Amino acid sequence: MIVSKLEGQWGAVRAIRLVLLTNFAFIALASSVLRSADTSPHEPCIEFEISLGKPRYVLGEDVWLRIVLANNCDSAVTVTELSYLAAGLRIDLVDSSGKRLSYTGFLDVDWYPGFEARLGAGESQGLLISLVESHGRHSSPVTFGQLLPTGKYRVSCRFYSASAGSFDSDTLAFSIEAAAGDTAKALAAYVALEDSAATLLHKFYREHRKEGLLLYSEYITTYPKSPVAPRLLNTLESLDRVQAGLYADWMISWYPESPWSAPSLLDLLYADGADRREILRSVANQHSGSHLRQVARDVLAGRRPVCTFPKAMYRIARELQEEPR
Image (cartoon, rainbow, N blue to C red; front, side):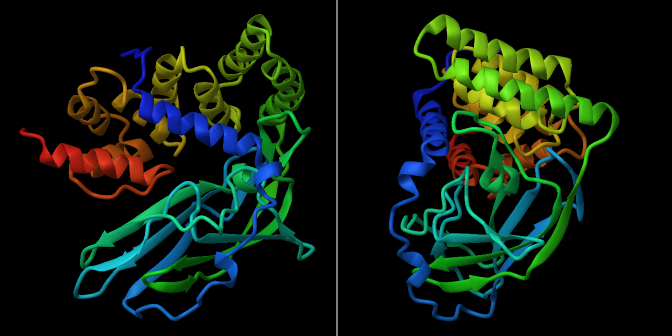
């Protein structure tokens, strides 16, 4: 299924997110309010946990940080909603020298208060963030792609909720190792690609922009097993809204295990005339054991999925629960 015309609301969210990612240098000067906010203790029955998929990664591979806030109380609680904007969330990523790496992708928006979410007894909310996108290094000011250098790292989080207090996570360790063989070759091609493609994409002339998008597309089809391919395909889908439906199909078909597949699923769900329940059922019955299959099943069941855009997914879940079957 290829959807070429996407519903404006979700397309706008993707566009805003891309603007935020590429204009961080101007917004980063904003004052940090929540870091000095109330650090009152939270209810002991509310648990805040982070986890990583594994302890070792290859250069270029996304390091997905899973963040979950669970209500184990006997009654409902109100907390700040976790979102891709990281509202009220501070992520401390420290390298082997003890240096704290600053945000370079997702914004460190401690000044943004966020929205509140009501979690029933036994419910939880979660978020997945790529530390490579949030803290990776750009090869130049005009490039979209990032890489976290090889080495050892430690990551921890603090989450502040005005209605529930502050939460501190444990500290996790992981390492990024050099690539070898075909993966090293693919990464070398990616580094060369980024400068040339991003320069073209920043030009105002349509023909240059098309050239840049084509370079990204050709890289993905040439190196489909590259560790950066899912992230690059997500970028391409955000940049080229005309072909977004096609790229969403690629992502779902080729990389359903990657958390980058969830935004692609949203693109299809928000397309004009989309049969959302049928799309979710199709995904839920395919891609055994994948991240995307679990997201689709959670949405169909009315649960909050743990993904890159949990708020948008949960909105659809609620709307489907209200629709006649």
